[in-house]
Image (tube, rainbow, N blue to C red; front, side, top):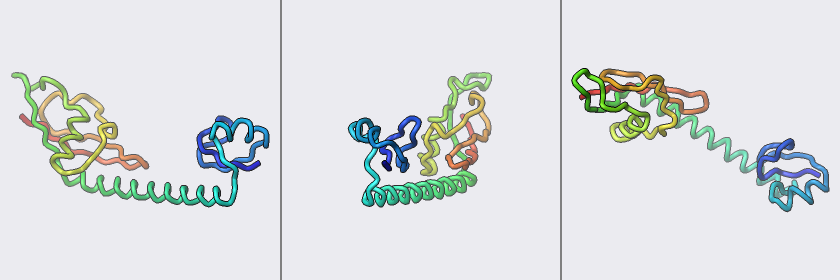
Length: 147
């Protein structure tokens, strides 16, 4: 029996896939647990529409990521922080601080989890911070830590 999976099913497939399973397995396990639906013409059409929508969503996200990379190249994010006598900051500049400053100064919303800080930022000066947007697209945030 051909079914369309509604959730990932171990050893059978991922959500949205069309798979062929035995009749008993479908009736006794998949259907009662709402893990799959029969592969009727209507369900197949719905699956194709969802796949098209998912592809369109991915293309839009990719275009937005490319636009953000272009915008990041032309801006320098300035963060002011307090430091002791020897120039070391009292804390460290975190990816959340960078994300908030980027949104406040340039209106670019980047999730803090996408900002990759290799070494902790604990002193004044310029830094280049890598930012991963997904879809193998990454950019560089130019950061300037000042007094």
